[in-house]
Length: 233
Image (cartoon, rainbow, N blue to C red; front, side, top):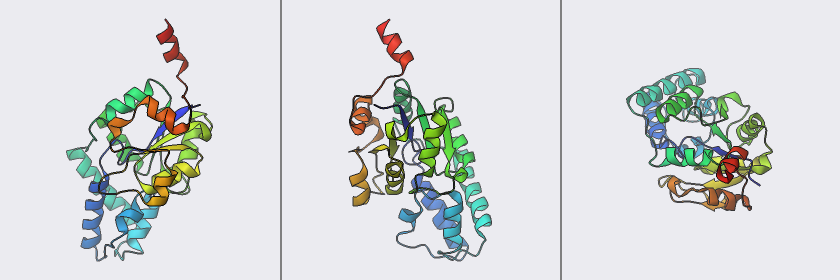
């Protein structure tokens, strides 16, 4: 039975992966580094500490990891101040899902960008638990953030359904023991192993329905008691 649904943010609610790639590519070029063909794929799901070390170390940026993190997040914050690129239909899907189950948010974005995105969507009060991988020991594909969000919601990870877009995100949620609905970005398709881990793969977030959530988990799902009571009355 489904006890909770845990959403990723980037690529699921906010179309931010292309923005992250643009900002980090420009930053690497401006600071003496070399962007690699697989850099974006490797970066997706990393925590702030992990991707800043990757840019500073493996990509040869002439800044410390701490400087990289501060400066890239500042660039992203400026972009978000201009416009948060919401994915069409995502806000309605989140609210519809919240009418059925408790929700959590497990994101690789820094806390300040999560806050900006939720403020822009009006979804701040929709999630019972929100966590950045900045606050966990390891980013995705490690299961840390999903396990922590499930714990904060007070639910068994095995009774959760995760909504993810990236291969590392799918791996993370699956490693936490959750059923996964994948909604891959057209520009960043899932790798075969990650696709096999997903119970359901959708082409867009507006295809996500309560029935799909229940199917991904292999059961009918469980309504919130207050919702079921309202339907009976």
